[in-house]
Image 1 (cartoon, one colour):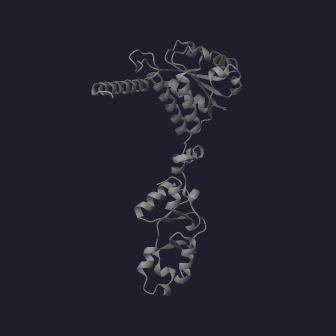
Image 2 (tube, helix red, strand yellow):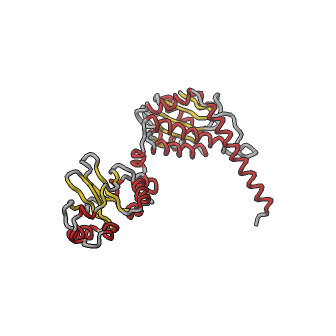
Image 3 (cartoon, helix red, strand yellow):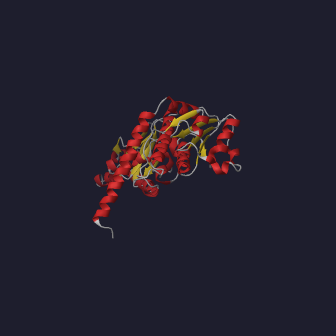
Length: 322
């Protein structure tokens, strides 16, 4: 069991590391110049893919950058420099742009990949900490990391440098994403699974289309049958103008006296809360929570507000929304 002195030492180290890396990111922000814009423009203009590469810790950062690019609308993949020398150079072609990371700029395993880009006219962007390094002297666009100490006191573990490289990759990804006007719908297409995909689902993706609908003049005896058969606990009342009302359990309780002698129009709550098919399902859940309802009709604003679906809170919960 560690004593309190050890715990305090760990806390002090943690704060020092985070502070040092935060300071490095601030330096990076100040150091960005026209070469950043040139790199983004070069990748946006690629007719092929962005090939991201790096060795060791830089390779791990390169993989993440490639994944971020790909998921935000920039076709990209990672090529391992050692594997590139044994056949994977065939994954690169004219029209591609290569983005290569190396803190020192002298990583030997990158030599064949860099030479391949020069031989076949593939645009090359380099990220390194030394402008005079072998990598950056070969590049079409150079992104130089500002001088900053690594987080460890010995200065030997890639920490601050990898954080700056990762932040630089994120900055390029967001710059291209915003230029392309990348929307949540585009993002959902690349992230259909998991919690994120669920949160970006639209009402149209989860709604039911076998609707509990009756006309305004339907007697409540028949209306109750429809309401029971559909099993949503709510009934829509629709005429030629679209959805004009809903009948809920609360409406039934308020009209118990002579209920079967009434029509749907007489019992319904007029001007019901609805949502459009393109609205995020997460927004629909927020509406249901606010209104304290369990079902929400989906109406198409392009078709005279006709109901086109119904969304139940249980559908959203099963999809991981809520």
